[in-house]
Length: 334
Ligand code: ZN
Image (cartoon, rainbow, N blue to C red):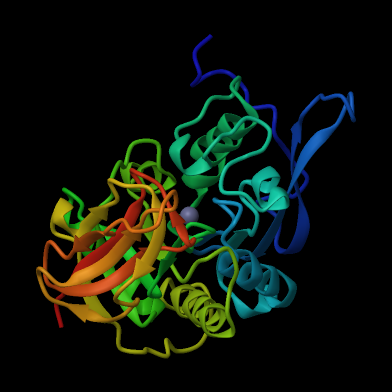
């Protein structure tokens, strides 16, 4: 039997074909010491009214990012079938074990869900979740919104993002959806490694895919949650699912044209940021100093911008390790 024919053990307690509002679970059997016949229960809400497009809205792909889980919990509570035409599938805590632990990856198998696609029906817990999205939920969707932020180790200026795609018609649809989201910034994003990402799985299936990075540091703010609330509503209207008018906030366009956007730390130590998120910097500007934590009297190592642009992401914790992404500088297009 191949992965394509093997059945995923996840059972949905909601009926994706039924009209109305249903709150239920994706039930993933997980036998363990404290529950021999236990299960990982992934909350899901389906709101459906007749025929029309389907939006798949996800948060908690990484377990320490909070704008998506908050905004989608509120949406699941308030969205009524009579408000929409089509279907909205809401999964606020996609990697539920990671979300409950408040960690980026799953405490069960150390799985990073956003590096686990297409997943495996007979794999680890995280791989089974990925497989269920790959083969059951993604095929139902026309448009996919995956809400991320920086988690405990990164902080971002708030942006919606799409990728550069080979299919230019698909890219322009993704860019229109990204702009409809209406975050303060809109980013054409370059991935360090796109293999195994939910984004890539959705894009390869021809779905309109929008991701976000709305903040970070392992918490959320009133401002970033409001951006998520507003963006979700806009995107559902833009998709023709939710009635109403898109209330567009102009987004500043950002681009990550090459690897010079990333400043990688080659030292370990105490991080002193010399410029802050959202500041414009010029090539050669001092961005950060790394101080020696093992002795006094040592000269700190300086890190400078490799390009001019906007400081869009930074390492969040006060200590930094060799290999960490220290800063991301993106081009400002308008
Ligand atoms: Zn994330």
